[in-house]
Structures are given as structure tokens and as C-alpha cells.
Length: 135
Image (cartoon, rainbow, N blue to C red; front, side):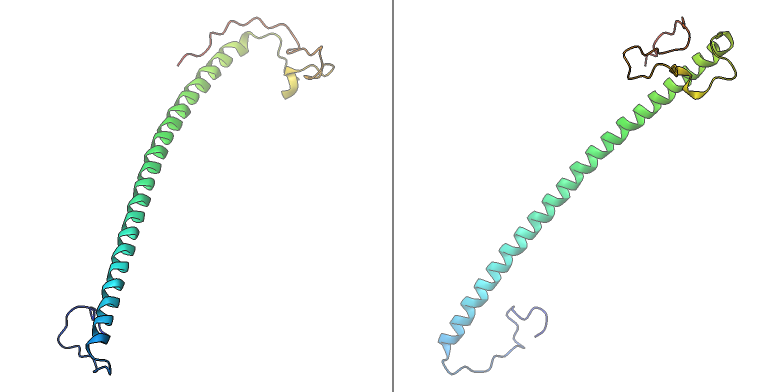
């Protein structure tokens, strides 16, 4: 059958049926039912497609907002890191507690583990006045 054979195409001829017009009206009822069922299915499909597009649009907007917030946070943290690096650079020359042989674990005394109640934060007393970074 060619595309669009359900339309009233005069080139399509049906072989005569033994029951005559009763069979023809039954075929018309089936055709109408099939078209109605197809129309409803197409309508539901379009509705689902629209809903999916709406959902994707909302998700896209939310992700763009989240991305903008994360970029803002990265910028703020980068500025804070620069600020803290400058504070450290300024303090290093005047810091008498740091010696060349100190290792990365200089923050904790080898005798006092951070989990112990007698834990000491620094090997020496540090009196540095650093204002907190303000955004």
C-alpha cells in the first residue's frame, strides 16, 4: 500500500466482498477507530516531547545558574589565595620560628599528635595579626 492510502484515493480499489456494504461499513468503523487511536497517540507523544523539552530547558537554566555561582566562587577563592600568599610572603622574612631544616609537618609537634588532648598547634608562639580576607 502506498503512503496515504487511508485517504479517499480514487486509484485505490477494493475487491468486492461477499457480504457487500455491511463489510464496507465495518471497515470504515475500523478505519475511523484506528485514526482516532492514532490521533490520540500522536497527541500524547507531542505532549511528552513538549514536557521533555520544558524539563531540559529548566535543567539547562539551573545548570547555567550553578555554573555562574561556581565561577564566582572560583574567582573569590583565587583572590583569597593571592591575598593569603601576599600575607605569607610579607610574614616569612620576619618569622623567627621557621628554620631552614623545618619540614612540612612543622605545624605539629612530633611529641603531640593532633588528636591528643595536649596537642600544640605550633612549635613556637606566633603572634601575627592578619585581618581576615573580606570579599
